[in-house]
Structures are given as structure tokens and as C-alpha cells.
Length: 171
Image (cartoon, rainbow, N blue to C red):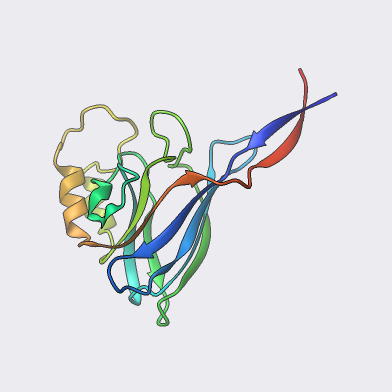
């Protein structure tokens, strides 16, 4: 006898502000039997070059990307490298993301910034700590967030209607 265990998938529709032509999507799929997340990014209309990409605290785009709040702790993604035509198509595995729980990304936003993260500075400032407890440098998130420039695109992360089901044996 088998029990159906949902294999959730999250999705964010990425758009730019104003008259921007940015358009695309980011999906988040948990790998079976691990805590890792497969992140797939397909976006067009971005300026060529490297850009920081973060999870932000609020899933609120009522004022564009400005209302997404600051970077949400413990959900490190890093930099993306956009091609000359303004597109990015990439997939990677992340051990730093979680869909649900205290550090869950569902209901938050994903934001692409104007400039890349300086990983050496950010990591030395303990920006990517492993818990929500007090950091030795409480301004590290704000300093790192300010160094990547304004948001150029964003989207709200939500559960998709295309949840996959994987049969699992009953215990």
C-alpha cells in the first residue's frame, strides 16, 4: 500500500519596474529525501553582466520592488551572470534555501539587484549566518544590501498549482 506525499514546488513571476522589459520566472523544487532546493532561473530583459539575487523579507510588490523589505537572513543565493542579450537561464542546487518553516521563502520575494554581491566582503561581515540569532555585526545585512544597488526586478514566491506527487510506502 502506498501513501501520496506531496512534492511542493514554488514559483515567482519576475517583472521589472516602470517601463522595464524584464520578464521571467524562478522556480524552487525540493530534491526528494534531502533538504536541498533546485533553483531554476529563466529571465530576459536584464542589463548584461553580474547581478545580486536575494530573498527579501516581504512578498509585497504594491510599490514595486521597494516594498519587498530588506534581504531575508539565511537564504543565500548569490550572483547571476546575464548574457549580452539580457537573458539568464540557469539551474543550480542550494543547501541554503527552505520552502517552509522559520526560514521558509514561501510568501517572501526574490529580488534581482543592479550590481553583484562582493562575496568576500559579505562573507567576512557574517551576512550569511546559519540562524536568526543576533549577529556580531548587526548592520551587515543592511551594508551588503546597500552595496548591490537598487532592485531592478522582483517577484513574490508562492506555491504553484502544479504540485507533484511522489508515491511513498506506508510505514
